[in-house]
Length: 462
Image (cartoon, rainbow, N blue to C red):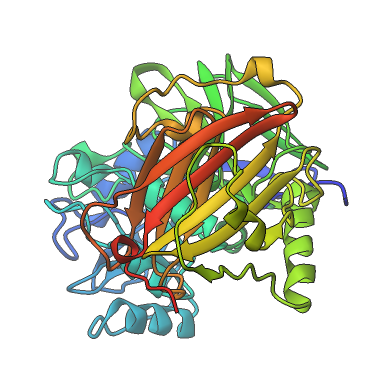
C-alpha cells in the first residue's frame, strides 16, 4: 500500500501573503444603495486588502474608483434565473439561458464562475444538489452568503459542498457578503494566500484554491507535509476535520490542529474552525492520494478486470427450515462464497465470512457463517425488529440493487441476535417488506439465516 499524501491547494512560497477580500457586493450600478466610492471606503475601513464589485448583469471597470489602498477587481453577478458570480470579469457576458450556458460564457471570457447562494429562497434550493451535480466547469460555490442571513433560506451550503466533493468534484468554497448596503459589509469574506498583492496574484490564488472562507475566524498558518496537516488559528476555540459526506474524523479544542491522515479511508479532508459567537472559518479541501482507500480501489479495479464475481441462487422445490444453524440439507445445494475484502484497505479480512443463497416458494434465502474470535464481546443492544440503529451492533449489512441500474437499493441489516431491519433508498418498489431472520452460534462464530419475499423486492425467481 502506497503512503497517504495530502494534496494541498495552498501556496507555500516564502514571502507569500495572506490577503483578505470580498468578492460579492452591489452598488448603485445595479440594485445597491451606495455608490462604488462609498462601498470601497466602507470595506477599506474594515481593513480589507481587495474588493470585487459584482453588480447584477452590469460589467464595469473600477479604474476610476478610489480603492483607498485596496486592489479593486471587476466582477458581475450574472443571470436572471440562476445566479452565477463572474469573479475577475473581463467583459460583460449574456445572462440568458440556463446556468450551464452562463458558466460556459464566463469561462470563454476569462472569468471565474462561482455558483451564488445555493440554499437561498424558501425552498432552500436556489440550486438543488441535482442541478449542481449536473453542471460542469464552475470553480466553486458560495458556502456562506451574508445576504441570506436576513433572507429566506440558509446562508450555509456546506452540505451540498461535501456531497460534490465526495463525488470527486474539485470545487472551492467561497464566502461573500452579497451586500446591497453598507450594513451588510463584513459578514463573510475570503482570505487568499497569494504570491503578491496585485490583482493577477489574487486571482491566481483564487483559481487554485489557495484561500479560506470566513465569517470571523482568522487562520494564521496552514502547513501540509505528506499525510500530516497542521493549522494555527488564533481566533479558534475548537477545530474539526471533516471527510467524505461531511463525516467528522477528528476534533480538537484550542487554536492549533495537528492531524495525521495516513490511516484515513477518504478521498478528501477539510477543516472547520469554530470561534466565539458562532463565527467560522473553512479551509479548502485537501485531496488524498494513496493510502487505504486507494488500495481498496485498486483491488476493486483488479477484480473488475477478471470474471465478475457471481453467486447464483438455485431455485429449489421447498424452503429450508430456518433454525439459525444452517443445518437443513438444502443449504448444501446452495453455492457458497467467501470472496470478501476489507473496506478499509481492500485486503483479505482477518476473519472468514461465508455466504450462501437460494430461492424457493417465492422467497430469497441468504445464509451467513461469520467467524468471530471474541464471541464474549459481541455488541447486541438492539432487541426488536425494524430498529434503524441495527447496524450499530455486531451485524451484517446487505445492499441489494434488484433493478441492477445503480439507481437505488434495499439495505438489509441483521444483528448477531437475528433482529432485522430493511430500508429502501431510491427504489421504484414501495410497501412493506416482510423479512425475517434466525440466528445461532457455533464454536468459532455466529450464523444468520435471512428470508426475503421476492415480490416485496420487486423481483422474481427465474
